[in-house]
Image 1 (tube, rainbow, N blue to C red):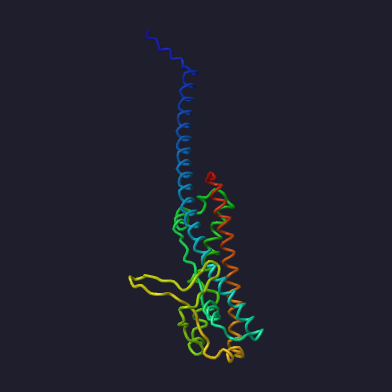
Image 2 (image 1 turned 90 degrees about the vertical axis):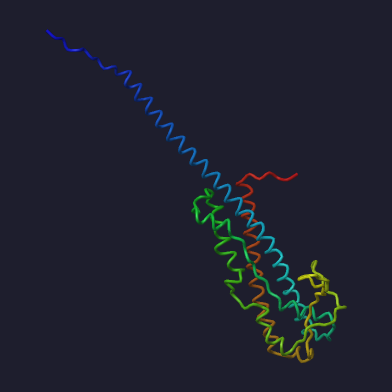
Length: 256
C-alpha cells in the first residue's frame, strides 16, 4: 500500500516570507518617493536661486529708473514754481526743461520665472512665496515695461512741442548736480571722445509761461509720472518682499 506524502504547511515560515516581501516592497517605494522628493527639493532650490538672482538684478535696474523718474518729478515741480512765482529765466532752468522730457522703462530678466512656469508653479511648496513671485512677474513687471505702457512716453509726449518752442542747450559750462547725477561729463563711447551735456532752452520763455497748451501738458505729464512712480514703488516693495522670503526659504546666512 502506497502512502501519501504528509505535507504540513509551515504558516509561520510563509507569513515571515510574506512579511519580508511586503517590507522590501514598502522600503523600495519609500526610497523611490524619498529620492523623488529630494530631487524635487533640489530642483526647487535651483529654480528659486535663479529667480532670486533675477529679481536682485531687476531691482537694481528698477531703483536706477526710479531715481531718474524722480528727477523728472522734481523738475516738474520746479517749473510749476517758476511759472506760479513769475520768475525770470536763468540758465540753469534748461536742466528742468530737459528732465521733464525723460522717461524710463524696465526690461526685467525673467529666465528663472519662465523656467519655473515650465516646470509648474507648484514646484514652490511655500504658497505665499509662490503667490508673491507670480504677482511680481505677472502684474508688477508688466506695468513698468515698455511693452505694456499705460500712459504716453514722456519723450514722445513733449517732442513735437519742443521742436517748435525749444532749442538744445549748447552751453557746456553749465553744470547740473542733483541726487548723485552730474552733467556735463566726458565720454569715449564708441571710441570717440566727446562731452555729454543736457538741457533745453525756451525760444521765448515769457510766452512759454503764459502758454495754456504747455501748462496743460505739464499738468497731464505730472499725472502720468505720478502713476508710473507708484508702479515703480510697488515693484520695489514686491521685489524686497520676494528677496527676503527666498533668503528665508533657502536659509541664507547673514554675511558678517
